[in-house]
Image (cartoon, rainbow, N blue to C red; front, top):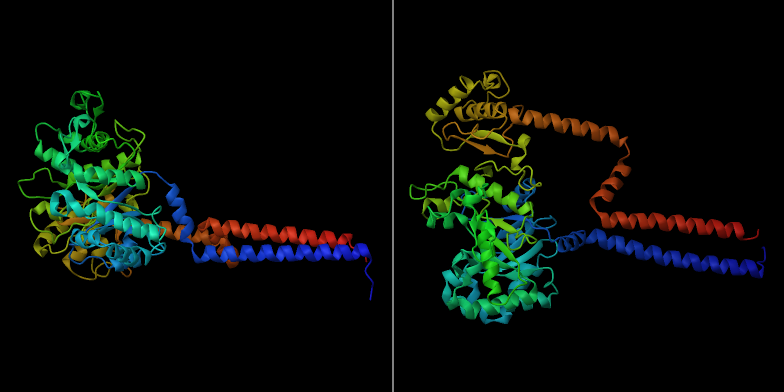
Length: 544
């Protein structure tokens, strides 16, 4: 056996020390990598906490016949690229279905639970444990709305509203979630009096004893003032004074702009004036650091003769322009640097709602997920994919009588010049052989031929736009043929780029989909390079 010299012995000890150090470092990196894999949403949470950009979300009411299952609802939200939602309760099935998605959800405490929660800290803590801690962080709960328009709908509960909020907040603190999850309560616009000009607005003085301590709490906790703001109702109550274009965010001539005589600020939209009225009202109570969150806003698409401005065109115009307004980040005349986030009311038509008729027609979609109208938002980010032109189709509506459908079908295949070849006997789309199936194909053919232009999917009210591909079996609808061609091309390109290197593709996918794991992998690679280099160096320097 070769006897080590003292220098060789020293070198060996150094080498052993380095190996021990590398082993320790390697263990730490592996442990961290394991944690990152175990909690992949942690990085997403931290990223979104730092992202203060304004967003558009949607309210989801459930008075809908044949409502989508929670799993289908989440898939629909993901397809439409809707990343912010508000629930009017804390539905456990929906919260479970949202797990491990990037959809942020605001949950709510129904009005009928405020009394119990406001009277008992134990009840509040149990509510947080049951509806927040049980799901977070796998489900990205971003906020809690306590009640809805409590001061105006159930004024008897007003004294307990803030105690309920504070007790729930204490529950968040106990779980160390108070910095990630904000808590507030939505208000009706009517809590603010004299809203125009905005500079003269103030909170109803009979509510000051409740509003002021609430605002102080919001200021202390960094939570928003939630306001349900509807320019539709302002216009309806002030016809002849408020121009329709002003309510719909349409461009105005200078003579039609509303001007605040005290500040000389020009208002081109009713919503901006309502938001600034809230800011001025808070300023009158010496609160200047609370931002306004619009927890509800929208426009109905249908009503009875008493509401003639509830039309599809007006609803489409309002919501499309509202989305653009938020995502343009233009702020308000008073605060151009601050743009309020908005939750559109609402995702689905709640057809089970009680009269008036308009109550059932605020949704962007029907309960079956087909679009009520096609929003024009393609130049304002990726929100609401139902505006992407090769992913929409025109089909026959449900429950339309066969005679009416046949007349529309005859027009589409005749004067409308739709390509109806594939619904002839022996062709791929002949079956099922019924007027609704044939009409849907003909409607979509005409709709696609017309470039999906506004009004090209109507057929005297018997057709509707959908984002669900109606193709079935070997029958491809006209709108899906282009989509199928694009998908085939993408698959071919992906196949050519793979070169059969399955492991390599898996690594690339991992690197691109999770930056934290990607960084850790790079660290591990660097570690091996350094360790190997060090060992080679010592081997070279060690005498034989």
